[in-house]
Length: 370
Ligand SMILES: Nc1nc2c(ncn2[C@@H]2O[C@H](COP(=O)(O)OP(=O)(O)OP(=O)(O)O)[C@@H](O)[C@H]2O)c(=O)[nH]1
Ligand SMILES: [Mg+2]
Image (cartoon, rainbow, N blue to C red; front, top):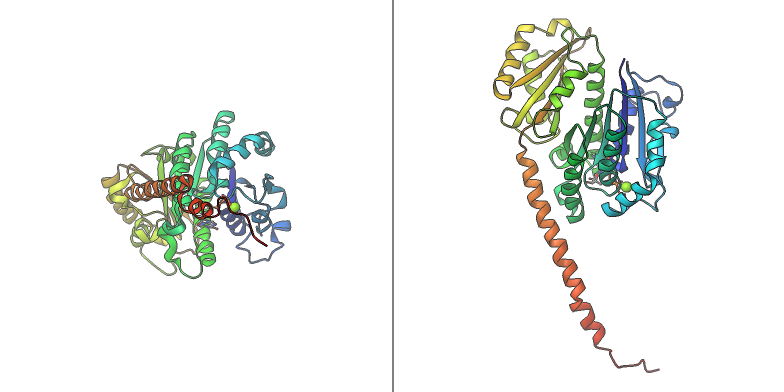
């Protein structure tokens, strides 16, 4: 049995964590009170902690126990300002680390956050650094990239926070990109919920598979090896068949753009991979699976494969892919650099005070006449 810690930082991290808890407690079907009496579906021991400076974000959670919601008092969030976020973390560090310490020891931890807000994006690198100094288990970050039209502050935060997380000692960064996933459709809220559910479903599948009695085994050791390949960046693909489907097609779909959380051509940019196939024995032809996996390993290098038998289920496939390059990320950094210059120029104009001061100067030496 594995001991797993999942931490969600800031609003985005809190919401994804809540989606994980929703699914873990039976998809929310048994109602709002499920968390108080139902048992989690995990084989592993999974502890969850939500951390935020904004109490309202924590209150919004529906499936995460109150004891798992940690409010770090600081007004109402840090308003996308990472410098304030870093300062608040430093001031409250011992309180935060005590929460983790109290949960006992773990085999693996995941930290969820957006790259672009203030709280999650500034807390995450500092938190990971503390965890790596104190504990010897691997810590993986799941980082959500912003919609590109969300504005200059979010773009520059994304660029700096990703760099900070990478330098924090994190054992790997799994990317999910709001921009790439936005065609999930509907309102922003529906898109968020859809994206959060996608990420949650993949994480739960992974946790389940790492702790399974598989027909062909992939375990935590394999996962660590996959994540240590490439440039410290990764993404996840997934496909769940809704009807009878050859396993080959299911594997292809889990590696195709429509199955991924981040835009990449896996045959071109992936460095190592893990592919886990689940379903009824009748779909799990070893020959077909091997043919498909060999195609991938021919392009990528090493691919671990795991097979989990699940009676009566259509094929489902999860892929974890570490990347040696990420063209889409380079594009994001290009836009972020423009955003930083834009903010800088604006600040300079304001400091030179030209326009507004000219207006004020018009009444220099005058007094109001009544
Ligand atoms: N996928 C997804 N993205 C979200 C969600 N909520 C916010 N975001 C994205 O996260 C970024 C904003 O970060 P938040 O997590 O809201 O910020 P925070 O960490 O709470 O920081 P502050 O509010 O500034 O203190 C934006 O790019 C949003 O598009 C969500 O529920 N799902
Ligand atoms: Mg917030």
